[in-house]
Image (tube, rainbow, N blue to C red):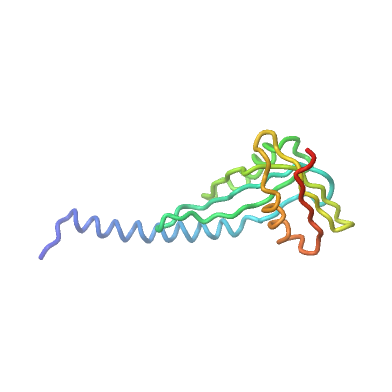
Length: 150
């Protein structure tokens, strides 16, 4: 029996899109892994943002993602930090969403980080999630979180 042209096309197209979807998923996962979880200044008091980075949707409907922390003293506003991060992932097929912000006090001599405050534009970040992420890089630090202060 001969298959209709439309049926054959659907079968070939389905295989193509399935393979392409797997390739995009693999590229998305690689791009996601390449994004550092933590990038903050070496010392000082500065604003920070918690950002969700998301890859392409997979065949099963899930989106691979991870949360990252960014904080820089040379950025006057939380939005400046977020925009810098958006630019750094541009062209990778990854999406970003700012989950909130606050401030970080980083004292490398004392191996101490304090996470506190909020962003007027993005709201308060989940400081406990930010602490969990910072501990992946600063394993031997004391990291304190508080909702006090701005």
